[in-house]
Structures are given as C-alpha cells and as structure tokens.
Image 1 (cartoon, rainbow, N blue to C red):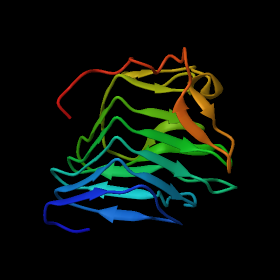
Image 2: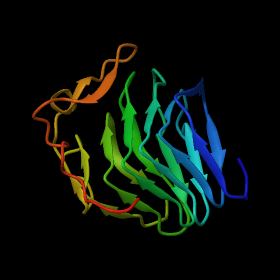
Image 3: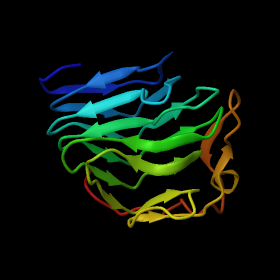
Image 4: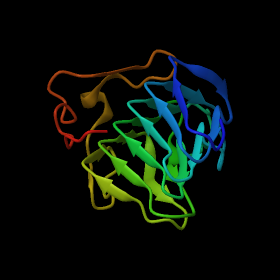
Length: 174
C-alpha cells in the first residue's frame, strides 16, 4: 500500500510480524489483522495524512513479549477499532513518534499501557482494561465482561450483552 488513495477492505490478513505497512491516504476498513510482532513490530503500521484504520480488529498474538497492535503517526487515524494482545500481555497498544493521530471509539485489551513514543494522540470515547489510562479512555474494564472470549486460538470478539462498550462510542460520520 502506498502514497496514493488506497482502500483496503478484507476479512483477514495473514499472520505475520507486520501484516500491513501503509502511508499517506491509505484507508483500511472492516479488516481482521492478526500478527505475531515482538517488542516493536506491530501488525499494522500506519503513517501519513489521510490514512486511517476503521471498523477493524487488530490482534498481536506473539506468545512472549508481544509488541503493540498498531504503530500510528503523522496525521493517521484509528476509528471504531478493537486492539488486543491474546497470547500474552502486551506492553503497549499503540506506538508512534510523529504528529497528532486521532484515536476514537476504540477498545484496547491485554496491554499494560496505551501508548509509547513521542507523538500525542487525541483520544475520544475509548475503552480498556488498563487501570489508569490517559484522558479519553475509560479504564478498569474486564475484557471477559466486554467480549465473548479473549482466549488465544478460540477468541471471539463479539461484544458481550451488557458490556460497557456497547453503545458507548461517539457518533460521527467516520
């Protein structure tokens, strides 16, 4: 995926350390992406103005020291996504070094921290199991109360009836 306007709509990308590496004006929509990235390798790296991941599930399944689910920066956006570490606890959900990315209506479960790196994302109406997340995140949610199953290999990310993430997002045109 490159610097021209690209739209990706898929059911599942292959299991790899980094499944998608994209830049300017790339739109990734309605995808399930699973990766086995280590300390700094995320299944999706998305940078550049006009780029976004929306309505997608991104899973880092590395069994020891999983890295982030998404690397994001330089004006890229993340809307209506679920980020998860399923085989082991991940250190951070997001990593980024440049710009001010937008993260809206997202859920991050199975990580010890939301973000590392030098950029300053704008977070709106997001949810996590982390006890003290940054502003814009509701924390201390239990993943097993939000999703049918977070168990690696048999995970089922359908929202569970009565979960706090149901109808909790901000309505917008994205």
